[in-house]
Image 1 (cartoon, rainbow, N blue to C red):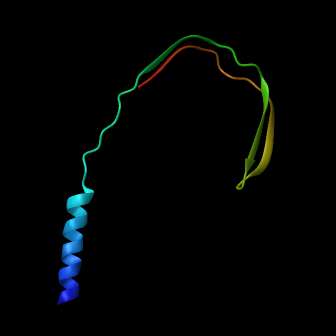
Image 2 (image 1 turned 135 degrees about the vertical axis):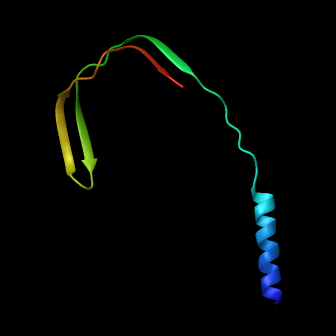
Image 3 (image 1 turned 90 degrees about the vertical axis):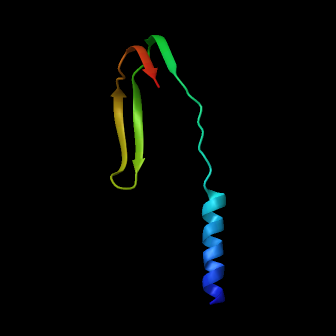
Length: 68
């Protein structure tokens, strides 16, 4: 009987004290300019497929990017 009361009190207390409203900061970012990245060798080390090297990987040119 005492164990059930202790469990009930612990449950009510954890729900009552644990529930807090969440808050977050708003963020926006805009970049206007040309991104020039040279070709490079890309080396990967993955447990599933093992090590791999991709030579002379080209990257896309980006003029304007934005994220919210």
